[in-house]
Length: 200
Image (cartoon, rainbow, N blue to C red):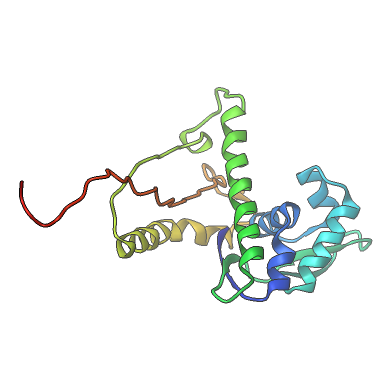
């Protein structure tokens, strides 16, 4: 999932500003239609809790009823957009927007830490291990925006598969891998030097 959906309604942003709702949205985007019970088993959460949050996501048009399950006793849910993205647009509630952004960052950070703590075995492949790239770059605002667009363009062909490949087991060697990019401007270093325009 690319967290780039254009949302300006503060109520919709507030509805998403909950870790479990983001988990559910991501799960349905990755695995396809599922019942609240199935979501609960995968996420380790009670069925009633999942059902409540799925209804809230549906209320704001983020998921929809996909019809009854095979046993006809429970409904299934699916994302309306097979590749949901989230972007808090300008003019929306700034405080709620920051809350949502913070939750997204916390979720991704926890996913990285969980991956680092996961035991390794002989079945590990390069794609199953955490890949970390850290660097300090000197860029203008325009160049920073260009880097972000290039990063998204690089991932685009692989993200496109997610909306059409509900079960990666149908494609030997493929698996779902999380990618997260964050550009964090660093504080300016004040050297304390004064320049009067004359050489000394």
